[in-house]
Length: 144
Image (cartoon, rainbow, N blue to C red; front, side, top):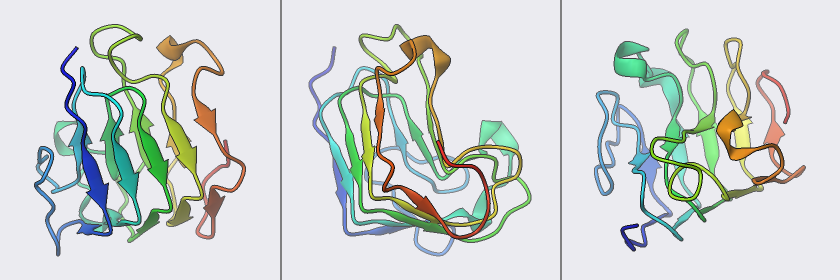
């Protein structure tokens, strides 16, 4: 596994303020790649208004790494293609991608279209990820 530690903190991401520190998608939303571990994503403002649905872009954050702390972020902005706030994905295997991440004190001021605030990949095996009850929604969608 690549031992890249990524920190995305106190920034903004979206169509008006692209954030290309990690990798970029066509909507300018951050993607945390598989086989990375132990990073922190904290204190950011994610703008979902540019989520287009193209190239599977249907969330404001795609997390494919392991052992990340995702805390104190705010998601806002409306898009008909915004399904989930954050998504985790297993690409290689659960030990190296998409699992064992912690989400805490994130706010979702968006209407989610058929999805969840945090959509966890089912390949992680149930409660291997910690989602805190202090994640909150003020714009619709479902709680974890």
